[in-house]
Length: 172
Image (cartoon, rainbow, N blue to C red; front, side):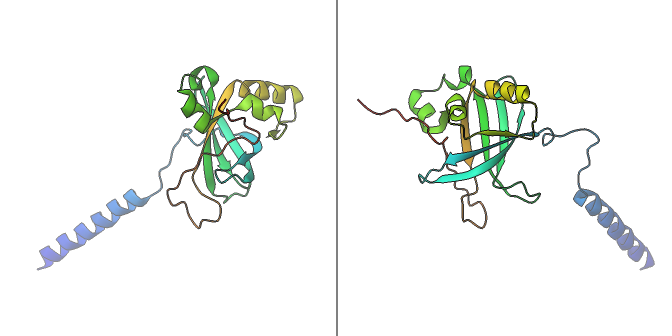
């Protein structure tokens, strides 16, 4: 009987140790994919229902020579929910899409910059701001809005807002 109690006790201790190890937060000595979102841009969007939303705070970083990605929030509070993701795609790539697909989901960042509604924040150097704007102007944007306004939580609905002032082609 005491042998069975010792085995049960040892099994319990091992189980607790293993479970504790499995539930411990992952610790990384290096950087991770969430590091580097330090370019802060602010812009409103034309929402899927036709209303103007935002302005949204975009926290962005480049991940390749073709793609720049941004995490979008309605505020800069530490606990602000992630509401959308926007990809800045080099025009040489995005403009290979079928025209109907491009017009449905993408917008030209140069056109958006020209409206004066896009602001580069947290950068004091005007030359650096100009450099960032020139680089962004060579991209098209696609926005995946994940958390719709007024919802308590994201329910799986995804909409594709546009830049305010985007020009939709009209049939002749």
